[in-house]
Image (tube, rainbow, N blue to C red; front, side, top):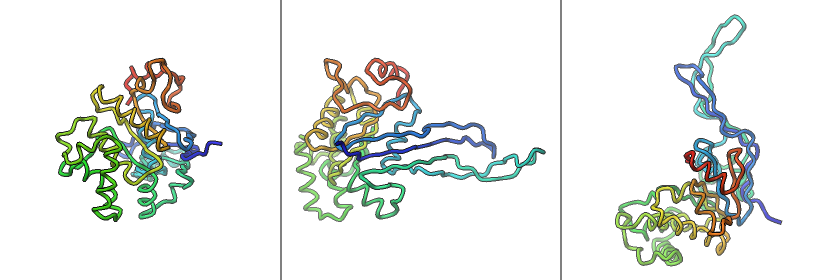
Length: 275
């Protein structure tokens, strides 16, 4: 039986637009959302712009919190006479629970939270965020050094990883002389250096030239199949997830919209500016 490694239960997220101490409008993003990813799956989260794809990924990865936050003062009616009183209201309302690798992430604080992320989750974003002053090798080794690994051991581990990803020839090059696809592959290597069991990828091919996009998706598929890494990816590039026979090449799609999940419907959504 497949074992869940990510379990989102009854997730709610609402944004309150407040101007001049007045509540102007409310926007519901998630309404009792349930989302489960089994160990070893490669799941792509799709849906129209503003539906909360990146927000979901950030909450799973603890880059964003679940609960209410950003409290501000508002004026509210307190009785039938129309009297008003200043009260506090969160700009962001949220509730629900998220378990990652059998851990309730809402209970993680401080160093325990950092340690959990470093040992379980690798992050990949649309833009590589490499440190320009460091070589590819140094960028990849940095997370291990931050964790206290010696420079020698971290460099050896980073070099092995770059070799596995066919980047060893670029180890001593700085980001400015790497192609877009090479930079993103270095960023993927950096995300893998602490051997996470989960990769969270937010539009990893969004800023790449079309010629590099397939290479990144192929790399994700290889990491998923050969290393058993669970991958959750937000993307608008639906076509890259199908082969020439129109067969889905990842485990499944998870849509945050009401549209049917198939290639034709996803192409329709893409034309409406998926973020």
